[in-house]
Amino acid sequence: MTPKRLSIAALLTAVLALLAVGLVQLAGSSSPTVASSGLTLAQMQARLRGAPPALAALHAQADQLLPGGLPALRARLASLRGTPVVINKWASDCEPCREEVPVFQRVSVSRGREVAFIGIDSNESSRGEALSFLHSFPVAYPSYFDPSGQAGETITDSSFTPVTVFYDRSGGEFIHQGPFPSVAKLEAAVERYALDA
Image 1: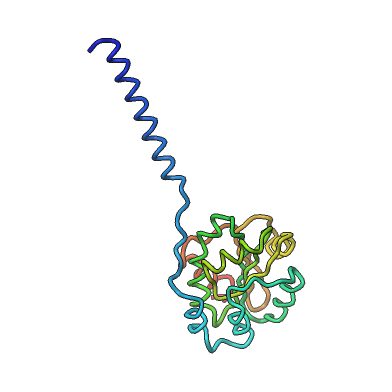
Image 2: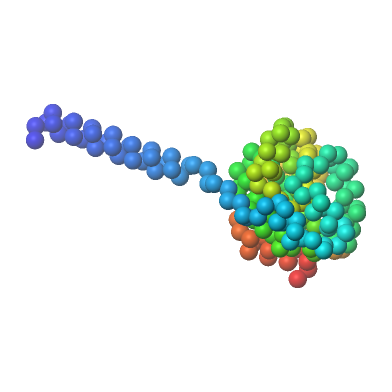
């Protein structure tokens, strides 16, 4: 092979190698698809029928984005005193929040007759984006709209998302920073921190 052909072959090999590396990186950086639990909102609510009144009131507001911020959230928590509570702080543009939605969909249905689930849509500038997200990935409980982030920071002691707060029957609190990657991990945390198992 002549030196000119050798340099063209080396250049082509280098270009192909760079292209391959770029394609691998591009494939690895794409966002995973959020997989829903497969249950419709009506199916979730049907499975939760017969829950105690305080929990049934939450299920009746499933998938809603409630106003009132921190005062409304505190009033709701006061009405749930003596009931285990799980609060999940999220935002529609938070990728880890999006990835854990199917986990909360499933666990809020499997545990929703004994544990209150509540969301906080924190630091979200657009109510429309949050509602669009909730309608795409319905949950069996309401979320409080918190555009300022005040309710989220006060309740979770964090400016980050996602954060989940567990309250047991006596008001004991445990704060978990970061997403729940599986139903098993969230179920275990509910057992340990909300149900005192």
